[in-house]
Image (cartoon, rainbow, N blue to C red; front, side, top):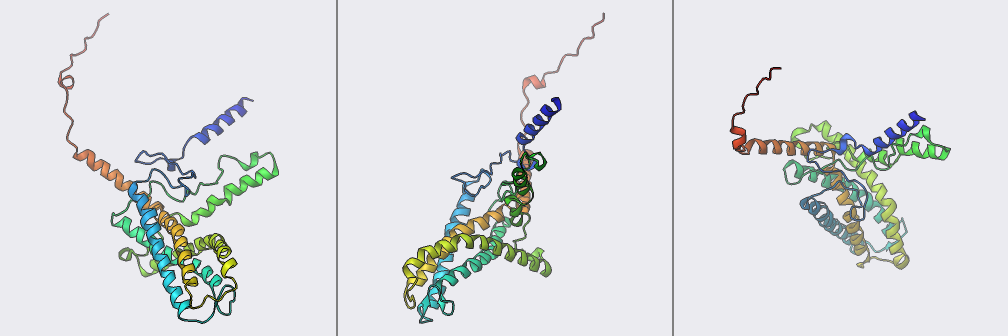
Length: 307
């Protein structure tokens, strides 16, 4: 019974004690929990400059570029280049198929361009990395619940899934190093650049597949009831549909890609080293503190008592 009590105590202490990854030189606590004002579970605190960069420049600004590019392509294809634009006919120009292909093309290009540009901004000192790696690979991983201690078979399977094959394990694909930095030509050989290009395309395609499962059905559900049986050639309907779809896709995808680059472990490690070096330099450059009279006053020697 005493051993069981000690075991439970250790179990509770293990849950309370933060891991080494939760400790940062800046002394900021890690708060990766999902909240209404932090739906992505970004590590806090973030500076105003980082928030403007993620959701302003990489969010709204990049979304406007994506929407404009999709509108221009759709205008050239559907308004002046063909006489038949339908919703579902694959033998002709189909809006449904175009939206599906747009998710993957825009997603891969976003990873290739936006992620590399974020790394360039960090390398040039225009933007700081996140205080902790992101995405948090410990999300939905239950390390404190041993599978062999589960009372039911269902509980054992649930614990095994969240320890070995849970969502947190899948997030390892988007974490790690600066493998998406394709514009560092000075320090990359051709073979290294090709390898980074392959992994960046693979990550962009994977993220695009996740967005496809969400954005494409919603877009079809909004567009098909009204324009499903109409010919949209030589009209503004198809270009406007592509404009809105590309804008919304970029508005949600670009900030995630930017956060993946800002939260790469290499970028976070370099950022912590720079902050530590700045703190050391500030301490060395600070003037010496003046000594007080009590510190300058000589102390009387202690007398030896003879018994």
